[in-house]
Length: 368
Ligand code: IPM
Ligand code: MG
Image: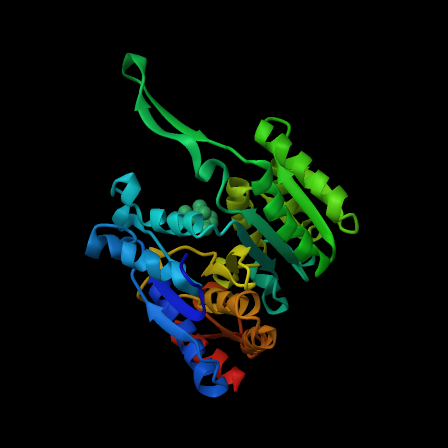
C-alpha cells in the first residue's frame, strides 16, 4: 500500500493551454509557501500527448507511481488534433482515464456558478442565469467509459461492430450518491438524480438505489429524479431550479459541458475528482479545469487561467482542509473581475483585456 503524502502536489500541465494555465497555479502555490509557510511540496511531470511524444505512452509508470503517492494532483489538459491518429490505447485521454480509474476517483464535482460580473458573457438571458449556483456530481469510474466488453470487432459480411457496455453496481451508485447528498446538506438541500430509467436497466437500478439510500440515510434532503434528456432541456429553460445534480459518467460529461456554458465561459469552471477517505481521513484527488487543451489558442498567452486557479481553491478546501485559504483565493478572483480585468474569452465592452500571466499576477496581488 503506497502511503499518501498529503501536502505533496503533483503538477501535470499536459497539452495545449494546460502548461500556460498551470504556470499561474504554480505562482499561487509559491505565494502560499512564501507568505503563509504552508509547506507544499511540488513536482511536475508529463502526461497526455507530450508524454506520448517523449516516451511513446500517455503516462509512464514512473509518473503514475508519483500520482499514487501525491495528495493533490493538479492537471492542466490533455489531447489535441496532433494525436488524433494515434492508436486508441495510446491516446492522450487514456492517461486521464487511467488516473481516474486506478486512483479510484469516483466522484467528480463540477460546480457551475455564474459570477455576477459576467452575466452578460452567457448566451442566455441575464435573468435566467444571474445568481446561478449548481453543483454537478458526476460518477467518474464506471458506466460506459469503462464497462466490458468493449472494442471493435469484425463480424459477418465484412462489417465491423463497435461495442461499449454501460454497467453500474449498487455500491458504485451508492458511494457517489452519498457524496451528492452530503454536499446538498451544505447547500440548498436539494438533489436531482438523472438517468434514463425509461430505456436502460442500469438507469432503473440507479434510480432505485439513489431512492433507497435517500429513504435510509438522507430523508432530510429533497430528492427528485429526472430523465437525463429532460435535464438537458431544463438546464437551458430554467437552470435555477437545480442545486445538486447527481448523474452517471456519460450523462455527467454532457450535462456539465452544457451547464458550464450557462456561466458564460468554459474558462471559469474548476472541477475536483475525489476518491474515498482512508483510515487517516485522507483521500486521493485530482483537480482540473473543465475546459480542454484548446490547441487553437495554445502558446498565445491569452488562455484564461481562472478555471485552473479555482481548481486549486477546490484542492485547498477538499484535500488540504484549508477552507479559509480557499475562500481568500476565490475572493481574489472575484476582486480581479470586479476591477474589470478580463482574458479574451470573457472580454466585454469597457473591460480591460489582460494576458494569462497578467491575470495570474493580478489574482496574486489581491491575495496580499
Ligand atoms: C471531461 C472530458 C473527458 C471526459 C475526456 C477528455 C476524456 O471531456 O473531463 O469532461 O470525457 O471525461
Ligand atoms: Mg467532457
